[in-house]
Length: 404
Image (cartoon, rainbow, N blue to C red):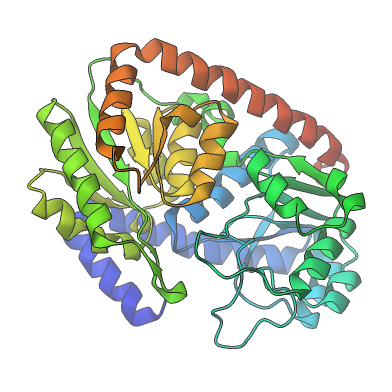
């Protein structure tokens, strides 16, 4: 994000949520300082992910580092810019001073058609030439990646197939977040590489297991607060949600408010702010939080106090789920459905274009509220399954990350 836009966002956040600005700035400065220290000392894990911008993407790196540190001892992490082209000089630095390379976080498996300088190497957001990829001498792994191509978006260019096949073939581990992503990415791979794809839940799905004392949801049985996490599409891709659809979600919020629910709206990126006027037009009182202007710890604490999240973004459901907060999905991006189906909550995913969307969501919220313990049991059982899968995967990665 250009510096001028960033300053405008900070000014806006300061007027809405002044208490979040100092922790946000401290986190940003601390991440830069940690990266510089890791480069000087060497022995770091080079992680291609997001450390600013989309709040959900930032939380992937935050949760992933906590997961690995918890299991293997504290690692030295160097978060590399996942949208910058990987150069030959980067590869030489990695070979000289990194311990491993992790690729994951930041919507990486999405057609990369919008750069100022065209991506002619990979056509997904990890932009590295095949020759530089082959030159990496450190263990390479993809961890908890998701297939992110959206409805209406152009397909990957033909050379994506060769590139993603080369990455999967070279990786010591290549994990995708859900069965839907595995199935879709397999379509681009030769058959002999299909078995190299593993199920690896996103670390955000597991946060209450990583730090139960500070990240587990409060689950107050008397609390009736619902948070809407909206997704307006991407202006840069020409895929923007129709205003009348967002208005229908505002009407849903109004009905829930009449039923006694406190309404919250959480934005993961600046683009979702375009939906806020439509919520106001619906005449529903709500509290707004700009999560991309909060520290990762602040985001975790924000979500864990809520009793229900209705999300349209992948991490708008994955993250609160990982804290133990019940989630439902309004689907205008298929990866929300992929996740909810993965954790046996597919019945709580309703298509945005469904003419009966509002009535169906009201019915599902009522079903949840009438028997919250039953909903919790499904969540907790499935999270244990995801945790067990993750621990088995980490067993195979121990030689690359165990300290000492």
